[in-house]
Each structure stands twice: as C-alpha cells, then as structure tokens.
Length: 166
Image (cartoon, rainbow, N blue to C red):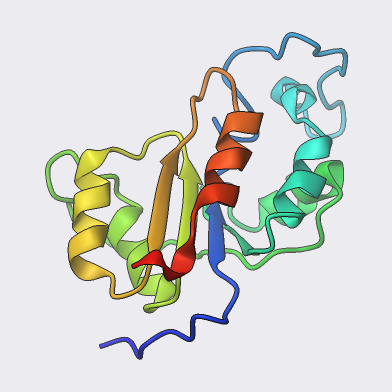
C-alpha cells in the first residue's frame, strides 16, 4: 500500500503527446512546417508556448506517452522543456476493465499515492471512477480534445484543481 502523500509535495503531471500536444487537426494559426529531421510532418502542430505554460503549472511533469524516451529527444526541445521522467510501460497483456484506458491502472501505481494530474485525450468516466476508488491521494484526470490539443481552458482546469481537496 502506498504511503500517505505529503500535501506539500508538487503533484505529478502525466502528459500524453498525441492529441494533447500534437492535435489531430491543424491549429488555426499553424505556420510551422513538419519536421524534416524526423520525417514527422505533425510536429509542426506543436505549440512552443505550451512548454512554458506546462512549467508554470508548478507540477512535476512526466511523459506518459507511447513516444516514451523519444519524447525527450523530439518533443521536449521543441517546447523548451528539459528532459522529463518517462513512464516505461510494462510488457503486460492485462486487459483493462471495460471502458477503461490501458494506462489508468499503471499510472495510478506509478503515482504511488502522490497527487497527480493526467492530461490525455482518451480519459473517460470509467478511468475517473477507477482512480477515485483506488488512489488514496487527490487526482485530476482531464480529457483534452484531440482535435484541438491543449487550450487555455485545459490549462485553466489544471490551475483550478486543488490537490488538497480530497
């Protein structure tokens, strides 16, 4: 069982890449081209200001993406982020509860009772219920619209969240 988290501890912020940082639809003001070096044309959809805005949230940022360590090599520099810890996904074939995201149980274990925010485009009510029933600390599971990517409304939701409220 996880130890009781210190409420003075900065919350973790688990961050997905595809959807939240690289939206599925082009941004209205998209002027950046794709990336010749990686061959990924969607990297032009990254919003460089998102890095600063994420750092300003005061959380401990952690990559929670299938990009894994590549997020530090390819995404972080384009957002002005330092190298971040990376969640290493297990090679388990556990089937999640119906309607629950495959990342949910693992991220909850990774948090180990610490307060956390999870920004992903595939979070649903089943994930929220599961975490509420099994995580002893406060948690905000915030679904980002994958068509738009992170918006001011998403950042505002994290800023409004009070990790000591649970």
